[in-house]
Image (cartoon, rainbow over all chains, first blue to last red; front, side, top):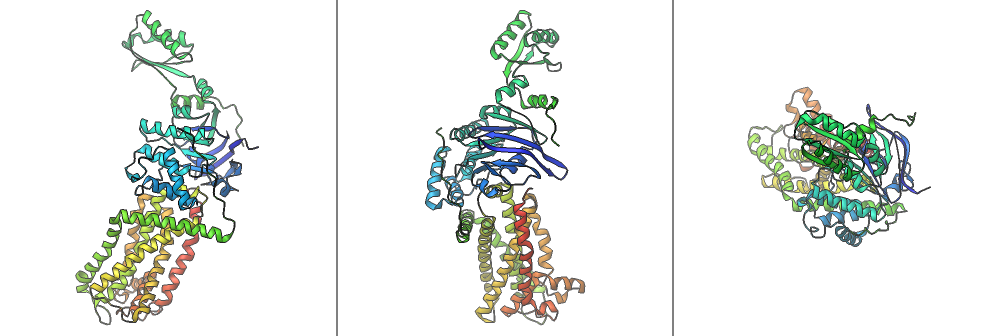
Length: 319
Length: 278
Protein backbone atom coordinates (compact mmCIF):
# COMPACT_ATOMS: atom_id res chain seq x y z
CA UNK A 1 0.00 0.00 0.00
CA UNK A 2 2.98 2.19 0.54
CA UNK A 3 3.09 4.24 -2.60
CA UNK A 4 2.21 7.10 -0.26
CA UNK A 5 5.02 8.39 1.91
CA UNK A 6 2.49 10.15 4.05
CA UNK A 7 -1.20 9.72 4.72
CA UNK A 8 -3.48 11.59 7.08
CA UNK A 9 -7.08 10.64 7.64
CA UNK A 10 -9.49 12.99 9.39
CA UNK A 11 -7.00 14.26 11.96
CA UNK A 12 -8.48 16.43 14.69
CA UNK A 13 -6.63 18.36 17.36
CA UNK A 14 -8.10 20.83 19.82
CA UNK A 15 -6.21 23.36 21.93
CA UNK A 16 -8.68 24.60 24.50
CA UNK A 17 -11.50 26.06 22.44
CA UNK A 18 -9.58 26.19 19.17
CA UNK A 19 -9.91 23.39 16.61
CA UNK A 20 -6.38 23.55 15.23
CA UNK A 21 -7.01 20.49 13.06
CA UNK A 22 -10.56 19.67 12.12
CA UNK A 23 -10.76 16.66 9.81
CA UNK A 24 -7.36 17.12 8.16
CA UNK A 25 -6.81 14.56 5.39
CA UNK A 26 -3.91 14.35 2.96
CA UNK A 27 -2.00 11.85 0.84
CA UNK A 28 1.50 12.52 -0.44
CA UNK A 29 3.04 10.09 -2.96
CA UNK A 30 6.62 8.91 -2.36
CA UNK A 31 9.38 11.08 -3.76
CA UNK A 32 7.24 14.17 -4.31
CA UNK A 33 7.08 17.62 -2.78
CA UNK A 34 3.80 18.68 -1.23
CA UNK A 35 3.21 22.32 -0.37
CA UNK A 36 0.83 22.89 2.50
CA UNK A 37 -0.43 26.38 1.82
CA UNK A 38 -2.43 28.55 4.15
CA UNK A 39 -2.45 31.74 6.20
CA UNK A 40 -1.31 32.01 9.82
CA UNK A 41 -3.50 30.04 12.17
CA UNK A 42 -4.83 27.69 9.48
CA UNK A 43 -3.31 24.66 11.21
CA UNK A 44 -0.16 24.14 9.13
CA UNK A 45 2.24 23.90 12.05
CA UNK A 46 -0.11 21.70 14.06
CA UNK A 47 -0.35 19.32 11.09
CA UNK A 48 3.45 19.15 10.87
CA UNK A 49 3.76 18.62 14.62
CA UNK A 50 1.29 15.72 14.57
CA UNK A 51 2.90 14.12 11.51
CA UNK A 52 6.41 14.46 12.97
CA UNK A 53 5.29 12.74 16.25
CA UNK A 54 5.74 15.87 18.40
CA UNK A 55 2.10 15.92 19.48
CA UNK A 56 -0.72 13.42 19.32
CA UNK A 57 -3.91 14.06 17.44
CA UNK A 58 -7.15 13.74 19.42
CA UNK A 59 -8.62 11.57 16.71
CA UNK A 60 -7.89 10.38 13.19
CA UNK A 61 -5.02 8.36 11.79
CA UNK A 62 -1.78 9.20 10.08
CA UNK A 63 1.12 7.23 8.68
CA UNK A 64 4.58 8.41 7.70
CA UNK A 65 6.91 6.14 5.71
CA UNK A 66 4.40 3.36 6.32
CA UNK A 67 4.33 3.63 10.12
CA UNK A 68 1.57 4.93 12.33
CA UNK A 69 2.63 8.26 13.88
CA UNK A 70 1.14 7.55 17.28
CA UNK A 71 1.46 3.76 17.67
CA UNK A 72 4.89 3.49 15.99
CA UNK A 73 6.36 6.90 16.78
CA UNK A 74 9.86 5.50 17.35
CA UNK A 75 9.88 3.89 13.89
CA UNK A 76 8.68 7.13 12.34
CA UNK A 77 11.44 9.13 14.06
CA UNK A 78 14.11 7.02 12.34
CA UNK A 79 12.69 8.03 8.98
CA UNK A 80 11.93 11.72 9.24
CA UNK A 81 13.77 15.01 9.41
CA UNK A 82 12.25 18.17 10.82
CA UNK A 83 13.24 21.77 10.23
CA UNK A 84 10.87 23.95 12.17
CA UNK A 85 10.16 27.65 11.89
CA UNK A 86 12.79 28.38 14.50
CA UNK A 87 16.41 27.74 13.74
CA UNK A 88 18.06 25.16 15.98
CA UNK A 89 21.49 26.42 15.01
CA UNK A 90 23.84 26.71 17.98
CA UNK A 91 25.41 30.11 17.45
CA UNK A 92 28.44 29.53 19.63
CA UNK A 93 29.48 26.42 17.71
CA UNK A 94 30.84 26.49 14.15
CA UNK A 95 28.74 25.14 11.31
CA UNK A 96 30.83 21.98 11.27
CA UNK A 97 30.56 21.51 15.03
CA UNK A 98 26.80 21.93 14.84
CA UNK A 99 26.52 19.13 12.29
CA UNK A 100 29.00 16.93 14.13
CA UNK A 101 26.94 17.30 17.28
CA UNK A 102 23.72 16.27 15.53
CA UNK A 103 25.60 13.45 13.80
CA UNK A 104 26.82 12.09 17.11
CA UNK A 105 23.34 12.37 18.57
CA UNK A 106 22.25 10.26 15.60
CA UNK A 107 24.90 7.73 16.66
CA UNK A 108 27.12 7.93 13.64
CA UNK A 109 30.18 7.75 15.90
CA UNK A 110 32.92 10.44 16.04
CA UNK A 111 34.43 9.54 12.68
CA UNK A 112 31.09 8.91 10.96
CA UNK A 113 29.70 12.17 12.25
CA UNK A 114 32.64 14.22 11.06
CA UNK A 115 32.58 12.54 7.64
CA UNK A 116 28.86 13.14 7.29
CA UNK A 117 29.23 16.73 8.45
CA UNK A 118 31.74 17.30 5.64
CA UNK A 119 29.38 15.82 3.04
CA UNK A 120 26.42 17.85 4.24
CA UNK A 121 28.41 21.10 4.38
CA UNK A 122 29.41 20.55 0.78
CA UNK A 123 25.93 19.58 -0.39
CA UNK A 124 24.33 22.58 1.27
CA UNK A 125 27.03 24.96 0.05
CA UNK A 126 28.50 25.74 3.44
CA UNK A 127 32.03 24.36 3.07
CA UNK A 128 33.66 27.80 3.01
CA UNK A 129 31.87 28.94 6.16
CA UNK A 130 32.22 25.56 7.89
CA UNK A 131 34.73 26.61 10.51
CA UNK A 132 33.21 29.96 11.38
CA UNK A 133 30.82 30.33 14.30
CA UNK A 134 27.24 29.98 13.16
CA UNK A 135 26.36 33.17 15.04
CA UNK A 136 27.86 35.11 12.13
CA UNK A 137 25.89 33.28 9.43
CA UNK A 138 23.26 34.99 7.27
CA UNK A 139 19.61 33.97 7.60
CA UNK A 140 19.84 31.77 4.52
CA UNK A 141 23.01 30.05 5.72
CA UNK A 142 21.39 29.29 9.08
CA UNK A 143 18.36 27.79 7.40
CA UNK A 144 20.56 25.68 5.19
CA UNK A 145 22.58 24.53 8.20
CA UNK A 146 19.31 23.63 9.87
CA UNK A 147 18.16 21.70 6.78
CA UNK A 148 21.51 19.91 6.69
CA UNK A 149 21.10 18.88 10.35
CA UNK A 150 17.58 17.62 9.67
CA UNK A 151 18.92 15.67 6.70
CA UNK A 152 21.57 13.91 8.79
CA UNK A 153 20.27 10.37 8.14
CA UNK A 154 18.87 11.12 4.67
CA UNK A 155 15.33 10.63 5.96
CA UNK A 156 12.55 9.27 3.75
CA UNK A 157 10.33 12.22 4.65
CA UNK A 158 11.39 15.80 5.41
CA UNK A 159 9.11 18.26 7.16
CA UNK A 160 9.92 21.89 6.49
CA UNK A 161 7.78 24.34 8.41
CA UNK A 162 7.85 27.71 6.62
CA UNK A 163 11.46 27.25 5.49
CA UNK A 164 11.80 30.73 3.97
CA UNK A 165 9.72 32.94 6.26
CA UNK A 166 11.75 35.98 7.23
CA UNK A 167 14.48 35.46 4.63
CA UNK A 168 15.63 38.00 2.05
CA UNK A 169 15.10 37.01 -1.62
CA UNK A 170 18.68 35.85 -2.17
CA UNK A 171 18.60 33.64 0.93
CA UNK A 172 15.19 32.34 -0.11
CA UNK A 173 16.60 31.24 -3.46
CA UNK A 174 19.45 29.43 -1.68
CA UNK A 175 16.95 27.52 0.46
CA UNK A 176 14.81 26.72 -2.58
CA UNK A 177 17.85 25.24 -4.32
CA UNK A 178 18.48 23.02 -1.30
CA UNK A 179 14.86 21.85 -1.19
CA UNK A 180 15.03 20.98 -4.91
CA UNK A 181 18.21 19.03 -4.28
CA UNK A 182 16.48 17.07 -1.51
CA UNK A 183 13.58 16.25 -3.83
CA UNK A 184 15.95 15.27 -6.65
CA UNK A 185 17.50 12.73 -4.29
CA UNK A 186 14.13 11.03 -3.82
CA UNK A 187 13.19 12.47 -0.44
CA UNK A 188 9.51 13.15 0.08
CA UNK A 189 9.09 16.72 1.30
CA UNK A 190 6.14 18.27 3.09
CA UNK A 191 6.65 22.00 3.30
CA UNK A 192 4.33 24.58 4.74
CA UNK A 193 4.23 28.07 3.35
CA UNK A 194 2.18 31.24 3.28
CA UNK A 195 3.30 32.03 -0.25
CA UNK A 196 1.59 30.61 -3.31
CA UNK A 197 4.70 31.44 -5.34
CA UNK A 198 6.85 29.28 -3.09
CA UNK A 199 4.51 26.31 -3.32
CA UNK A 200 4.30 26.88 -7.06
CA UNK A 201 8.10 26.93 -7.41
CA UNK A 202 8.79 23.82 -5.36
CA UNK A 203 5.76 21.56 -5.06
CA UNK A 204 4.29 18.84 -7.27
CA UNK A 205 1.13 19.04 -5.23
CA UNK A 206 -0.42 21.92 -3.31
CA UNK A 207 -2.83 21.38 -0.45
CA UNK A 208 -4.62 24.53 0.64
CA UNK A 209 -5.48 24.47 4.34
CA UNK A 210 -8.07 26.59 6.12
CA UNK A 211 -9.48 26.22 9.61
CA UNK A 212 -7.69 22.92 10.16
CA UNK A 213 -8.86 21.22 7.00
CA UNK A 214 -7.54 20.72 3.47
CA UNK A 215 -9.97 22.62 1.21
CA UNK A 216 -8.19 22.07 -2.09
CA UNK A 217 -5.53 19.57 -3.11
CA UNK A 218 -4.18 19.53 -6.64
CA UNK A 219 -1.25 20.23 -8.93
CA UNK A 220 -0.09 23.86 -8.94
CA UNK A 221 -1.26 24.30 -12.55
CA UNK A 222 -4.79 23.09 -11.93
CA UNK A 223 -5.08 24.98 -8.68
CA UNK A 224 -4.00 28.20 -10.30
CA UNK A 225 -6.32 27.83 -13.25
CA UNK A 226 -9.09 27.12 -10.76
CA UNK A 227 -8.36 30.43 -9.12
CA UNK A 228 -8.24 32.17 -12.45
CA UNK A 229 -4.59 31.86 -13.38
CA UNK A 230 -2.45 34.93 -13.89
CA UNK A 231 -3.67 38.46 -13.63
CA UNK A 232 -3.05 41.76 -15.32
CA UNK A 233 -2.86 44.77 -13.04
CA UNK A 234 -3.09 48.15 -14.66
CA UNK A 235 -3.25 51.76 -13.58
CA UNK A 236 -4.66 54.46 -15.87
CA UNK A 237 -3.20 57.92 -16.16
CA UNK A 238 -6.68 59.45 -16.05
CA UNK A 239 -9.19 57.89 -13.65
CA UNK A 240 -12.12 59.29 -15.66
CA UNK A 241 -11.55 56.67 -18.38
CA UNK A 242 -11.92 53.82 -15.87
CA UNK A 243 -15.41 52.71 -16.91
CA UNK A 244 -14.58 52.75 -20.63
CA UNK A 245 -11.41 50.77 -19.98
CA UNK A 246 -13.27 48.29 -17.75
CA UNK A 247 -15.79 47.42 -20.46
CA UNK A 248 -13.00 47.01 -23.03
CA UNK A 249 -11.15 44.69 -20.69
CA UNK A 250 -14.27 42.70 -19.90
CA UNK A 251 -14.58 41.87 -23.59
CA UNK A 252 -10.97 40.58 -23.66
CA UNK A 253 -11.00 38.62 -20.39
CA UNK A 254 -14.55 37.35 -20.57
CA UNK A 255 -15.15 38.26 -16.92
CA UNK A 256 -15.89 41.48 -15.13
CA UNK A 257 -12.65 43.16 -13.99
CA UNK A 258 -12.10 44.34 -10.43
CA UNK A 259 -11.99 48.13 -10.42
CA UNK A 260 -10.62 50.27 -7.61
CA UNK A 261 -11.98 53.79 -8.30
CA UNK A 262 -9.80 55.39 -5.65
CA UNK A 263 -6.40 54.31 -6.97
CA UNK A 264 -7.52 53.99 -10.61
CA UNK A 265 -6.39 50.37 -10.60
CA UNK A 266 -7.97 47.60 -12.67
CA UNK A 267 -7.33 43.91 -12.23
CA UNK A 268 -8.37 41.09 -14.58
CA UNK A 269 -7.68 37.38 -14.66
CA UNK A 270 -6.12 36.08 -17.88
CA UNK A 271 -5.31 32.65 -19.21
CA UNK A 272 -3.15 33.36 -22.24
CA UNK A 273 -0.50 35.44 -20.51
CA UNK A 274 1.49 37.48 -23.02
CA UNK A 275 -1.12 37.41 -25.78
CA UNK A 276 -3.64 38.90 -23.36
CA UNK A 277 -1.14 41.52 -22.29
CA UNK A 278 -0.55 42.62 -25.90
CA UNK A 279 -4.26 42.60 -26.61
CA UNK A 280 -5.00 44.81 -23.60
CA UNK A 281 -2.32 47.31 -24.53
CA UNK A 282 -3.40 47.62 -28.15
CA UNK A 283 -7.13 47.84 -27.27
CA UNK A 284 -6.52 50.66 -24.79
CA UNK A 285 -4.15 52.35 -27.21
CA UNK A 286 -6.75 52.36 -29.98
CA UNK A 287 -9.34 53.81 -27.60
CA UNK A 288 -6.84 56.54 -26.71
CA UNK A 289 -6.64 55.58 -23.03
CA UNK A 290 -3.23 56.22 -21.51
CA UNK A 291 -1.68 53.56 -19.29
CA UNK A 292 0.36 54.66 -16.28
CA UNK A 293 1.51 51.20 -15.27
CA UNK A 294 0.79 47.63 -16.36
CA UNK A 295 1.99 44.29 -15.02
CA UNK A 296 1.36 40.59 -15.41
CA UNK A 297 1.40 38.70 -12.13
CA UNK A 298 0.45 35.42 -10.47
CA UNK A 299 -2.59 35.32 -8.22
CA UNK A 300 -1.70 36.08 -4.62
CA UNK A 301 -2.49 33.70 -1.83
CA UNK A 302 -5.13 36.17 -0.67
CA UNK A 303 -6.95 35.89 -3.97
CA UNK A 304 -6.60 32.11 -4.17
CA UNK A 305 -7.67 31.83 -0.60
CA UNK A 306 -10.68 34.09 -0.91
CA UNK A 307 -11.77 32.21 -3.97
CA UNK A 308 -11.39 28.76 -2.39
CA UNK A 309 -13.05 29.63 0.90
CA UNK A 310 -15.92 31.46 -0.82
CA UNK A 311 -16.57 28.43 -3.00
CA UNK A 312 -19.46 26.26 -1.76
CA UNK A 313 -18.06 23.13 -0.09
CA UNK A 314 -19.44 20.27 -2.17
CA UNK A 315 -17.66 17.50 -0.30
CA UNK A 316 -19.79 16.30 2.58
CA UNK A 317 -18.55 17.37 5.98
CA UNK A 318 -17.12 14.49 7.99
CA UNK A 319 -19.02 13.68 11.14
CA UNK B 1 23.20 21.07 -7.24
CA UNK B 2 23.76 17.33 -7.09
CA UNK B 3 21.18 15.26 -5.25
CA UNK B 4 22.11 14.43 -1.68
CA UNK B 5 23.43 10.99 -0.93
CA UNK B 6 21.53 8.61 1.25
CA UNK B 7 23.02 7.19 4.40
CA UNK B 8 22.10 3.92 6.07
CA UNK B 9 20.58 4.57 9.48
CA UNK B 10 22.52 3.10 12.41
CA UNK B 11 20.93 -0.01 13.86
CA UNK B 12 18.43 0.47 16.65
CA UNK B 13 19.95 -0.85 19.89
CA UNK B 14 18.36 -4.17 20.82
CA UNK B 15 19.50 -4.86 24.36
CA UNK B 16 18.97 -2.73 27.45
CA UNK B 17 22.73 -2.35 27.88
CA UNK B 18 23.12 -1.08 24.32
CA UNK B 19 20.40 1.50 24.74
CA UNK B 20 21.91 2.56 28.05
CA UNK B 21 25.24 3.08 26.27
CA UNK B 22 23.44 5.29 23.74
CA UNK B 23 21.91 7.35 26.50
CA UNK B 24 25.23 7.92 28.24
CA UNK B 25 26.97 8.70 24.94
CA UNK B 26 24.25 11.23 24.03
CA UNK B 27 24.45 12.86 27.43
CA UNK B 28 28.23 13.12 26.97
CA UNK B 29 27.77 14.89 23.61
CA UNK B 30 25.39 17.38 25.24
CA UNK B 31 27.77 17.95 28.15
CA UNK B 32 30.57 18.69 25.72
CA UNK B 33 28.33 21.24 23.98
CA UNK B 34 27.89 23.04 27.29
CA UNK B 35 31.60 22.95 28.09
CA UNK B 36 32.38 24.46 24.70
CA UNK B 37 29.84 27.20 25.43
CA UNK B 38 31.57 28.05 28.68
CA UNK B 39 35.02 28.14 27.16
CA UNK B 40 33.86 30.38 24.29
CA UNK B 41 31.58 32.55 26.36
CA UNK B 42 33.46 32.59 29.65
CA UNK B 43 31.63 35.75 30.65
CA UNK B 44 28.45 33.79 31.39
CA UNK B 45 30.34 31.58 33.81
CA UNK B 46 32.29 34.47 35.31
CA UNK B 47 29.09 36.44 35.82
CA UNK B 48 27.35 33.56 37.59
CA UNK B 49 30.37 33.16 39.89
CA UNK B 50 30.78 36.85 40.51
CA UNK B 51 27.38 37.02 42.19
CA UNK B 52 28.04 34.70 45.17
CA UNK B 53 31.45 36.30 45.69
CA UNK B 54 29.83 39.71 45.88
CA UNK B 55 27.26 38.39 48.34
CA UNK B 56 30.06 36.99 50.52
CA UNK B 57 31.55 40.46 50.71
CA UNK B 58 28.24 42.31 51.23
CA UNK B 59 26.92 40.01 53.92
CA UNK B 60 30.26 39.10 55.43
CA UNK B 61 31.43 42.66 55.94
CA UNK B 62 28.55 45.15 55.45
CA UNK B 63 25.49 43.50 57.01
CA UNK B 64 27.65 41.08 58.96
CA UNK B 65 28.98 43.84 61.16
CA UNK B 66 25.47 44.31 62.58
CA UNK B 67 24.59 40.60 62.84
CA UNK B 68 24.56 38.65 66.05
CA UNK B 69 24.94 34.87 65.94
CA UNK B 70 22.74 33.10 68.52
CA UNK B 71 24.95 31.38 71.06
CA UNK B 72 27.85 33.60 70.08
CA UNK B 73 30.41 33.15 67.34
CA UNK B 74 31.71 34.81 64.22
CA UNK B 75 29.00 35.79 61.68
CA UNK B 76 31.21 34.92 58.73
CA UNK B 77 31.52 31.38 60.09
CA UNK B 78 27.72 31.29 60.32
CA UNK B 79 27.21 32.84 56.90
CA UNK B 80 29.13 30.50 54.59
CA UNK B 81 26.86 27.39 54.79
CA UNK B 82 23.91 29.70 54.10
CA UNK B 83 25.61 31.10 51.01
CA UNK B 84 26.49 27.61 49.76
CA UNK B 85 22.82 26.70 50.10
CA UNK B 86 21.57 29.86 48.39
CA UNK B 87 23.92 29.24 45.47
CA UNK B 88 22.53 25.71 45.04
CA UNK B 89 18.98 27.09 45.13
CA UNK B 90 19.68 29.81 42.56
CA UNK B 91 21.25 27.14 40.34
CA UNK B 92 17.70 26.10 39.49
CA UNK B 93 17.43 29.33 37.48
CA UNK B 94 20.43 28.30 35.37
CA UNK B 95 18.70 25.03 34.52
CA UNK B 96 15.38 26.74 33.85
CA UNK B 97 16.92 29.38 31.58
CA UNK B 98 18.71 26.84 29.41
CA UNK B 99 15.61 24.65 29.15
CA UNK B 100 13.33 27.55 28.13
CA UNK B 101 15.92 28.69 25.56
CA UNK B 102 16.09 25.22 24.02
CA UNK B 103 12.30 25.07 23.81
CA UNK B 104 12.04 28.56 22.31
CA UNK B 105 14.74 27.89 19.73
CA UNK B 106 13.16 24.64 18.57
CA UNK B 107 16.13 22.57 19.76
CA UNK B 108 13.75 20.62 21.98
CA UNK B 109 11.45 19.88 19.04
CA UNK B 110 14.40 18.60 17.05
CA UNK B 111 15.42 16.34 19.95
CA UNK B 112 11.88 15.07 20.30
CA UNK B 113 11.51 14.30 16.60
CA UNK B 114 14.73 12.26 16.68
CA UNK B 115 15.14 8.61 17.63
CA UNK B 116 16.71 9.74 20.85
CA UNK B 117 15.79 8.88 24.39
CA UNK B 118 14.38 11.71 26.48
CA UNK B 119 16.49 10.29 29.29
CA UNK B 120 19.62 11.21 27.33
CA UNK B 121 18.59 14.83 26.95
CA UNK B 122 17.77 15.12 30.63
CA UNK B 123 20.92 13.29 31.68
CA UNK B 124 23.00 15.64 29.53
CA UNK B 125 21.38 18.60 31.29
CA UNK B 126 22.18 16.93 34.62
CA UNK B 127 25.85 16.34 33.80
CA UNK B 128 26.32 19.92 32.69
CA UNK B 129 24.45 21.52 35.58
CA UNK B 130 26.13 19.40 38.24
CA UNK B 131 29.51 20.19 36.74
CA UNK B 132 28.69 23.89 36.74
CA UNK B 133 27.48 23.77 40.34
CA UNK B 134 30.54 21.88 41.53
CA UNK B 135 32.81 24.53 40.00
CA UNK B 136 30.67 27.25 41.56
CA UNK B 137 30.80 25.59 44.96
CA UNK B 138 34.55 25.11 44.72
CA UNK B 139 35.17 28.79 44.02
CA UNK B 140 32.81 29.81 46.78
CA UNK B 141 34.70 27.59 49.22
CA UNK B 142 37.96 29.27 48.23
CA UNK B 143 36.28 32.61 48.76
CA UNK B 144 35.05 31.52 52.19
CA UNK B 145 38.50 30.28 53.20
CA UNK B 146 39.92 33.64 52.16
CA UNK B 147 37.63 35.53 54.57
CA UNK B 148 38.42 33.20 57.46
CA UNK B 149 35.68 30.54 57.23
CA UNK B 150 36.85 27.04 58.23
CA UNK B 151 35.46 23.54 58.69
CA UNK B 152 36.25 22.14 62.11
CA UNK B 153 35.26 18.45 62.03
CA UNK B 154 37.73 17.11 59.50
CA UNK B 155 37.60 16.48 55.73
CA UNK B 156 35.19 13.52 55.84
CA UNK B 157 32.37 15.52 57.43
CA UNK B 158 33.16 18.48 55.18
CA UNK B 159 32.88 16.25 52.11
CA UNK B 160 29.57 14.88 53.43
CA UNK B 161 28.32 18.49 53.69
CA UNK B 162 29.34 19.25 50.09
CA UNK B 163 27.57 16.05 49.08
CA UNK B 164 24.36 17.26 50.74
CA UNK B 165 24.63 20.61 48.93
CA UNK B 166 25.04 18.88 45.56
CA UNK B 167 22.14 16.56 46.40
CA UNK B 168 19.95 19.62 46.89
CA UNK B 169 21.17 21.06 43.60
CA UNK B 170 20.48 17.74 41.87
CA UNK B 171 16.91 17.69 43.13
CA UNK B 172 16.42 21.28 41.96
CA UNK B 173 17.51 20.36 38.43
CA UNK B 174 14.19 18.55 38.15
CA UNK B 175 12.30 21.58 39.37
CA UNK B 176 14.24 23.70 36.85
CA UNK B 177 13.50 21.31 33.97
CA UNK B 178 9.81 21.09 34.84
CA UNK B 179 9.41 24.84 35.25
CA UNK B 180 11.49 25.44 32.11
CA UNK B 181 9.11 23.30 30.06
CA UNK B 182 6.16 25.08 31.64
CA UNK B 183 6.94 28.79 31.42
CA UNK B 184 7.57 30.88 28.29
CA UNK B 185 11.08 32.14 27.59
CA UNK B 186 10.27 35.73 28.60
CA UNK B 187 9.28 34.51 32.07
CA UNK B 188 12.59 32.74 32.74
CA UNK B 189 14.18 35.83 34.29
CA UNK B 190 11.26 36.18 36.70
CA UNK B 191 12.22 32.86 38.29
CA UNK B 192 14.37 34.79 40.77
CA UNK B 193 11.29 36.51 42.20
CA UNK B 194 9.97 33.50 44.14
CA UNK B 195 13.49 32.23 44.83
CA UNK B 196 14.66 35.31 46.74
CA UNK B 197 12.13 34.99 49.55
CA UNK B 198 12.65 31.23 49.63
CA UNK B 199 16.40 31.77 50.04
CA UNK B 200 15.91 34.40 52.77
CA UNK B 201 13.01 32.81 54.63
CA UNK B 202 15.37 30.17 55.96
CA UNK B 203 18.38 29.89 58.21
CA UNK B 204 20.68 31.16 55.45
CA UNK B 205 21.47 34.68 56.68
CA UNK B 206 19.61 34.98 59.95
CA UNK B 207 18.85 32.30 62.54
CA UNK B 208 15.09 31.53 62.59
CA UNK B 209 15.23 31.74 66.39
CA UNK B 210 15.46 35.52 65.92
CA UNK B 211 12.28 35.67 63.76
CA UNK B 212 8.61 36.10 64.81
CA UNK B 213 6.99 32.73 65.56
CA UNK B 214 4.93 32.29 62.36
CA UNK B 215 7.95 33.14 60.19
CA UNK B 216 10.17 30.96 62.29
CA UNK B 217 8.06 27.85 61.65
CA UNK B 218 8.12 28.43 57.89
CA UNK B 219 11.84 29.14 57.92
CA UNK B 220 12.62 26.06 60.00
CA UNK B 221 10.70 23.75 57.68
CA UNK B 222 12.15 25.27 54.50
CA UNK B 223 14.05 22.50 52.66
CA UNK B 224 16.93 24.92 52.20
CA UNK B 225 17.19 25.27 56.01
CA UNK B 226 17.58 21.51 56.33
CA UNK B 227 20.56 21.41 53.98
CA UNK B 228 22.15 24.58 55.38
CA UNK B 229 21.58 23.44 58.98
CA UNK B 230 23.06 20.01 58.29
CA UNK B 231 26.08 21.60 56.57
CA UNK B 232 26.56 24.00 59.48
CA UNK B 233 26.69 21.06 61.85
CA UNK B 234 28.99 18.98 59.65
CA UNK B 235 31.38 21.91 59.19
CA UNK B 236 31.14 22.73 62.92
CA UNK B 237 30.03 26.32 62.23
CA UNK B 238 28.07 28.14 64.94
CA UNK B 239 24.50 29.37 65.27
CA UNK B 240 22.19 26.67 63.87
CA UNK B 241 22.01 24.21 66.76
CA UNK B 242 18.48 25.48 67.72
CA UNK B 243 16.13 23.27 69.72
CA UNK B 244 13.24 22.86 67.22
CA UNK B 245 12.46 19.47 65.69
CA UNK B 246 13.49 20.32 62.10
CA UNK B 247 16.70 21.99 63.32
CA UNK B 248 17.45 18.96 65.44
CA UNK B 249 16.87 16.55 62.56
CA UNK B 250 18.46 18.67 59.85
CA UNK B 251 20.67 15.80 58.67
CA UNK B 252 17.67 13.56 58.11
CA UNK B 253 15.69 16.33 56.43
CA UNK B 254 18.65 17.35 54.26
CA UNK B 255 18.37 13.91 52.65
CA UNK B 256 14.57 13.51 52.84
CA UNK B 257 13.60 16.86 51.29
CA UNK B 258 15.69 16.48 48.10
CA UNK B 259 14.49 12.89 47.70
CA UNK B 260 10.89 14.07 47.99
CA UNK B 261 11.50 16.84 45.45
CA UNK B 262 13.03 14.30 43.04
CA UNK B 263 10.16 11.86 43.50
CA UNK B 264 7.64 14.59 42.69
CA UNK B 265 9.38 16.54 39.94
CA UNK B 266 11.20 13.80 38.01
CA UNK B 267 7.99 12.11 36.78
CA UNK B 268 6.38 15.52 36.24
CA UNK B 269 9.30 16.61 34.04
CA UNK B 270 9.29 13.39 32.03
CA UNK B 271 5.54 13.63 31.43
CA UNK B 272 5.76 17.29 30.51
CA UNK B 273 8.57 16.48 28.06
CA UNK B 274 6.53 13.74 26.38
CA UNK B 275 3.40 15.88 26.05
CA UNK B 276 5.10 19.15 25.26
CA UNK B 277 2.86 21.44 23.19
CA UNK B 278 0.06 18.92 22.98
